[in-house]
Image 1 (cartoon, rainbow, N blue to C red):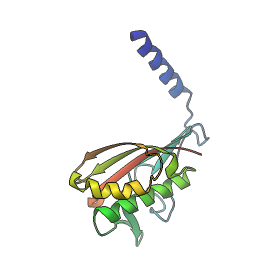
Image 2: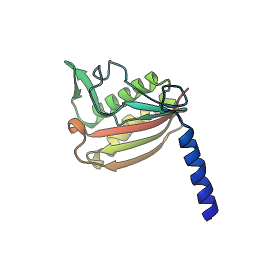
Image 3: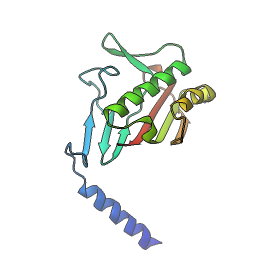
Image 4: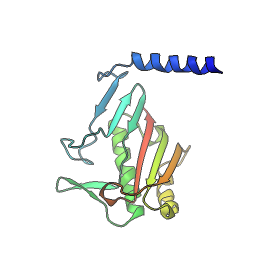
Length: 157
């Protein structure tokens, strides 16, 4: 067993060592999201998504839209926030040459787990076919007082 773990660690380290941080398709290439969803230029200390090889890692998204040049949470609670969150995710996936049907994993953070059924109803409409793997947990203090934040991992086309 120890030999298998050691061999797996060597393969992972060798793979990581061979990755470039250039903007080539095989390297890590951060990019800004569609301007319609976020402020340009991007003023925050993180990327909305990062591509590594054929994987696209999205940062957590909340149900915000740009109003007068600044992000503002949509009004109405968990249902409109979940819808806007998923639309923001869709826009970033499109910019990154992917789509919702290529999402393989989502992580959902919720301010109140009692709102799970309402969030889940909206979320499920964005994945009508095969569902990505998903984790969820309760969280306090989401950005802008959001009720939900979702991050994703997707394959690039």
